[in-house]
Length: 347
Image 1 (cartoon, rainbow, N blue to C red):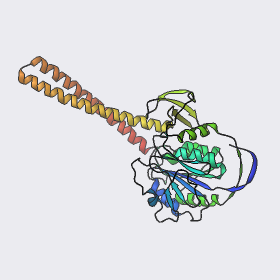
Image 2: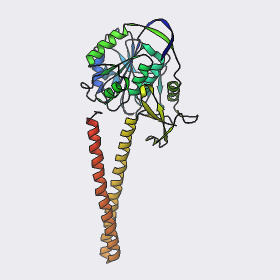
Image 3: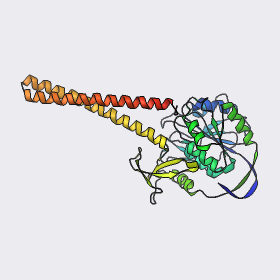
Image 4: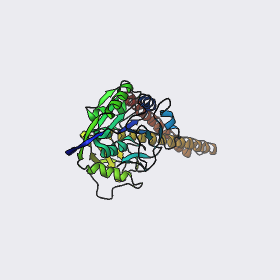
């Protein structure tokens, strides 16, 4: 959203990259094709477990001319360098500085792509290029829409080339006019676009995105004011609180609880599926143990000649075993559907 009189020429001086499953190799190939004198800082998010080790910067820049490091809170990014979100921290760009956030998970992960893309869109506007590489589900899609709304550019790995096409496909759907190509094409696109002059303009404030970024900068982030949108009749898988609808750029939808956990509908559905799987697995385990215990009680009653007790425990064991069989069928069906979903449209 750009308004006001044009300002002096500037250059696209910031590139943000999101990658998940299959994305590390794609990021490495992309970086290997970027020139060492790239006139833009590169900020990257790769979905990492909280316990991940600290060798990611070395891994993604192997055989490349781009030096890399984990981002440090308060650092000023420099051109020609890659700054990666460290494990269990969101990476944000606020003004001219990098910020790290231990705020609520977004789309079920921390670090997540959307917070970086949202904050960079606010901070850089036309000077920003967003890149989405291989990954599952749709983290980064709403962020790409925000970048385009703030007049930045978006480049997306061709889903046919990506090892996992979920993130690229979702990002394409959220933008409509993004550049799409293989990794080599994206490297050429980024190199050329960062050397072009752009006319910057005064931007309208975006209170929703500003508020979201502010909340992420607080470790105890949450809504202190009344709920921001209508109740969605859904609950947050992270904390069990109510989820509220929050319209986002380009018609994308975000669901957010009062704590600040944010979800796209697709990642929420995936998380609900995992929660259901865990619940069924726990129920199978408990019912199996109940069947074992009641069978033992039936055997003990038989040894003592207590036929009534034996029949009662036998019946309880049979009921538990029948329930286990039913739940195992349900669990197998859920896992099969999840597998189908992971190979069609969310690879």
